[in-house]
Image (tube, rainbow, N blue to C red):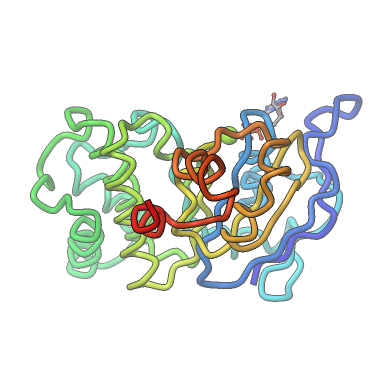
Length: 262
Ligand SMILES: Nc1ncnc2c1ncn2[C@@H]1O[C@H](COP(=O)(O)OP(=O)(O)O)[C@@H](O)[C@H]1O
Ligand SMILES: [Mg+2]
């Protein structure tokens, strides 16, 4: 559904290429993880996909149609994004106002707005906080509300740009579990950006980036079985993989399989 061909981008004409000939494609409904160190070009890539940055080389096709300056507005409403810092994305005085904001802007009728807001808050287990002020929630709760705001718009593609990086391990796990439910129940395409390899196990497809280039892509099994590339990417190997490398000659196993083998 989304096909990126030979995408090259630089912020200034004489500056270094931040994306260098990136080609990728993934299917509608997939959970896609994009992994890479700081500065590898992940945010730039999604900003281009969302039409926030223009004047790139290469092309982006959505369902076979090339994205252009003229048609980007039609696609933009099919994409929703949640950013890293939970504090920078609230506009409503209460949780439910905040989640309803995008729908209100679209002129959705009151009854439908309430319904969609409740459904989105239920999906992230935050309905009981509907009348709370977003500013007073924990980091994890704020990100769940931000996800609800995105979900209320029923996007085809939900992008999370390091949305868990400021959360504690419990908060991260909560978000990943919620995403798993959303992915299963709504068939939303997820683009999950992270620098943490331990967060990609649930995804269908993963892309490793480094310095504006794609180092590897494919299934999780493929990504984790190519240890040389993982080491080259300078990402921290997940704990279970470090154990597996030490005890199982590097064979890729899931957390559950590792527990069983041990
Ligand atoms: N607005 C900008 N102007 C100039 N350079 C930028 C800008 N935003 C990002 N960069 C540079 O582009 C590179 C890729 O950044 P980014 O896409 O944010 O990477 P990531 O999200 O993987 O950390 C980095 O070297 C960064 O310094
Ligand atoms: Mg980034």
